[in-house]
Image (cartoon, rainbow, N blue to C red; front, top):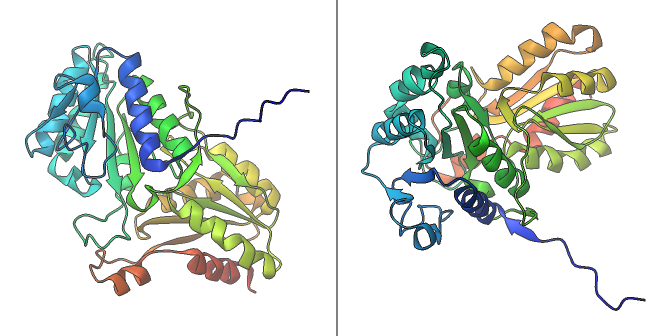
Length: 333
């Protein structure tokens, strides 16, 4: 009998998984580089490029001027001429500074050049509220990006998916936005040391159930899972799906779940009005109407800028309690 102890699965926090994913891409792809504000010796404001400057040097970990338009323009030009840039937009809110480059260049150039130009650009950006950074540094604007043909958008909820989606994005020949979450940086999950991809365009059923499908985006996956026990006490067995990929969206997995549960709820941190949950609801009510016993419900933030006040921000953010309340409303219990 072997005396060797069984090796425990390795766990990494979300922030370290980001670092490892980027590092392994840089090793695999000699024409890849990182560019953004404070990504070099500072290792980014959130710390997920720590150590990369020392390992890869200033030619591959590039500190840029404070110009989001310049960062995206650099990535568009570099990718069209043979590089595979990883761009850092410190806060998602700053996409407003460079939306022309995103919407009219990055998203469209491959189509307008008849496929002659390839734009393998990966953009890492930080979204979400919860740490009192106020209205200009706390938004979730994934619906802006998902509306653009030619751009892919993913939102990892955990460390395993953060690494796997970064690698998948970096290997994709299209522009991909990896929308990260501030409140998730310390959350740990099992993360293999080797490179692996989490497929873009594929949702994951993180908990099976039979009474209600909860489609959760980003950090709201954890709030949905926190709602499972209170719902169970009400006699509701909830199925929780981590959407993961906003564009393309995995409609098939959602429909298959509704075949079983006959009721659905979408939850995202973004403002409810005009949020991506409306698109999901429209698709499901068009394609899965015969399976539904109730309208698709939605939980999102109120139509307001994110408050700076910690007390108000707590009220602003969707949570497990709001999910339970919406399920009760939908089921009439």
